[in-house]
Image 1 (cartoon, rainbow, N blue to C red):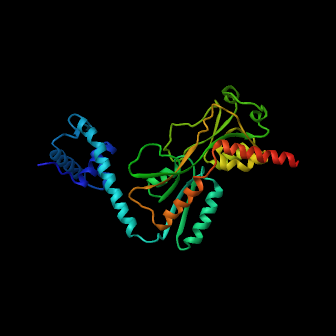
Image 2 (cartoon, rainbow, N blue to C red; image 1 turned 90 degrees about the horizontal axis):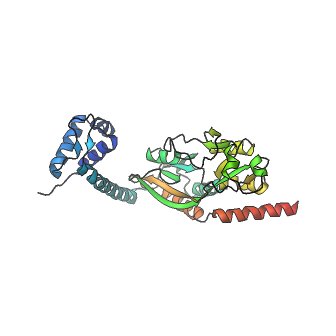
Image 3 (tube, rainbow, N blue to C red; image 1 turned 60 degrees about the horizontal axis):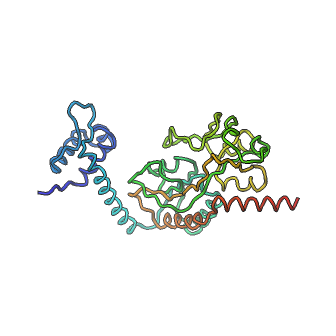
Length: 320
């Protein structure tokens, strides 16, 4: 007879493989450890292959067969979650509440305009809004504290999260107009920035722990959030990368200067709408994601942004 594993068996298999032990899987699934062991034993009997090595080991370890079947189990469980999600979205009405996590990379004017329209269209829907950086958006979505996230790409592949690209932004290395780097008035080298203080945001979520992005100086000051970093850079206390939409007015007024630093990676930063596969968006959430997609998909590229800023600066200089 062909093997016919149940969904429950596959979910237990994934839990043991991902947590690394039967006891941890039992805690995750709120079951007795003996039930976890029994379920895995039955699954192995049906498949007629061992999935875990147990003899002489403190913790079970995936066999070669177990490693080979792990992607299949993930795909089957994820497909069922998609099916459940689709059915749920078809029968649910307007959400009573919407929880939203937004990256600082999303332009503030876009947030204000779209949420203003959202309030007019859905006056009965309560809104919970969190704005942060780095791994915060992903962390809030993955833990269920936010139903929808608008932010960057996933730090690592996650079959439980649905990610849909809706636009882009980018970071710019900047400094105050009176900062030594800004006064050089030429393309900068690594040697120019090595001894200057660079301001860097620390990811409070821990999802990017041990990873630094575009940290080029030997001397760094680490801060908890983008807003503090912005204020310190404006005050001339160091240089660093900031979201282009956040510094648009500073660049136009000349308060901040964009540094021409080839070593600083300025590629487009893709923005995604994130949600758990098992939690489909309702009418209000779907409208909001589509509204941000229309807005963010038309954001300028880094080159177009630079042209706009330079044109504005030329107009100010001419007026003076």
